[in-house]
Picture 1 (cartoon, helix red, strand yellow):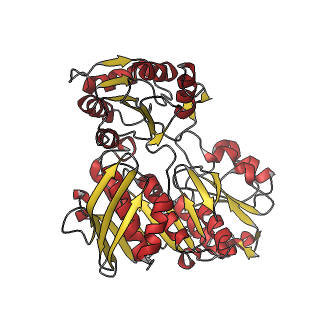
Picture 2 (tube, one colour):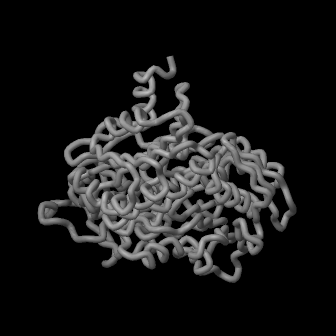
Length: 496
């Protein structure tokens, strides 16, 4: 067992650790006061909605031996009898303390970090499938779920806290696995959730507008993504996998010792797709790579998935996976929940659910639908509340300029008025003559677009994808686009 001085070594304490506390034994760490046990350290993070310091007294009552925070204790905690330790950066301190407690597990793991605006989730699923096809025991961390040795767990955040990573890595190593694939969001890189982590391979899918409510500018957003390739208090990744057809990728700072795989469709990509064939059943193409040529088949559809498949190919190659195993892994990955996921009840038109929640992602998913040669494309979308307002008219424009009919509805309005959000998106939609319907009730909107569909059409339900909830000002309700669509299709007489 370690003592407080050992666990907090190097965390950036603002004042020296009191001598009386240095030898205090420590059992564990946590940032959730409800999980604190005897001889744990409680990390109290200041949050946007909740200040973790509010739970310091509760943590102490449950047996915490110290509170670690970026901020001083609030006045109501004046009677706290355990040390309150201020640090320069709370999440970085948690990561360093986790490493002290568990050991440098990231150095024992083949860690793949995937960042970018669109395609992270699909690419992560594909990479995990490739590594499993190569015989590895794997872990997967992403937006939809976490997995350990094939067993799914509920995802807390796209990228969890560093402590959660260390716990997962410890379990993975205990099952004789060492391959971990994770979506690494710009928020996580900025906040320090992967501070001090060593990545074997870092992947950038693409960069387009997103999360500017948090980052403010595209340059700041891009700079956050670049942290994955610089290394945060850790060596830069051994390998980088970059999209040659995305202009931002050329600006990524790369260390001299980082080997680079450039993937794309052009001649300047060293992992290149050639002879691309696509249809309703999926994709086929040949991969030209430094290791030779090999054929790829996938049940995923649309040109955008060529890029995701290529990113997974390049990542597999960065680990020395044989091309035949790469091809087998990609072929085995049938679908990714909420990513152009089909809802079929025997109806004569195609219904798909997709997570697209940016203008670029919306264009991409509509382009995938167009590539399947439908009679019409009907698109339903909404915009999230308490998020970047500037992207709302851009999404309206993306839907209107590429669809034959648009239904504008609610996504997760959160604390905002759904009609106000719709009006923001309507600014872009109204620039075109595309027929459209405004319906803030998402269930009614789904019914309306399904009733408008005719044989040979494709209906896109965009924005929520795999999510099974809807967030309002005063409540969160169960809501799954896939379930709602199936129920209405049954009412329409399909699937009986």
